[in-house]
Length: 98
Image 1 (cartoon, rainbow, N blue to C red):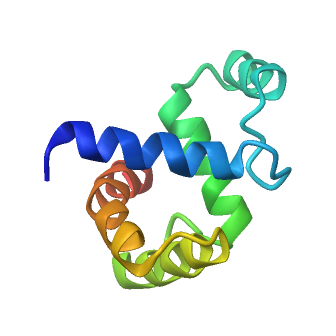
Image 2: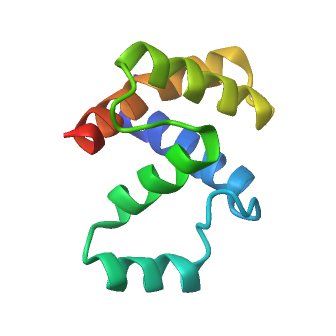
């Protein structure tokens, strides 16, 4: 898939969740959290998604994918759009788990 297409999907995903309090993507809370934790925005977003979908750092990759897929389905994305988001999300959550 072209990087441009992935970027579009990520923008659409963020647009759908920006008002959902479970994610805390608002500028104020995110920046306060970044300052308090001295971490990256990517890590913060993973923390927010993990909390929203009940993902623990010790969850297996399979359990993480299942929880992410269920969360993506809740947002109303099509199966194909959700499937396209999984590889980049897998990559980010592998790094998040360390």
